Image 1 (tube, rainbow, N blue to C red):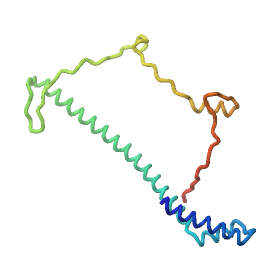
Image 2 (image 1 turned 180 degrees about the vertical axis):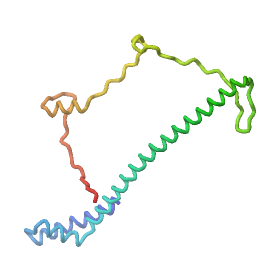
Image 3 (image 1 turned 45 degrees about the vertical axis):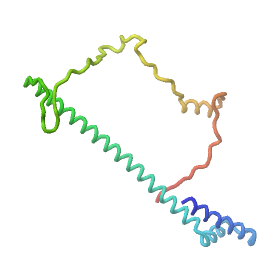
Length: 168
């Protein structure tokens, strides 16, 4: 991938310099036409962009499928809990005591630990509250800096270049 681009870029730059030195004043359109006919750089770029677009679509599809699978896992967990609850109720109503040796498992009732129930959250003393770690409101800070405020702890970068791809 990268080697192919590097190889084609090297050929492109070499031919570009040669053409510009031999034909001074050559316009950009003619130069690009000539170079695209003599090198495979544009094809290599096109192939790589197409591959990147495909990877992005695959990533989106994978994320969507993952959400579906998580939903299915949650439904299966809920269904298993309901089934266990039905078995627990059956054990209690039938007044079964000891472990039962069944074909799938040995089943018995056990005591569960006490669960905490908060009746009124407003009455809980501070000593039992967790304070969330403070986080920086980056949007608010950036907006303030764009409005001319300066801070010793932060600055705005010069930005950079990004590739803009409009798929057909």
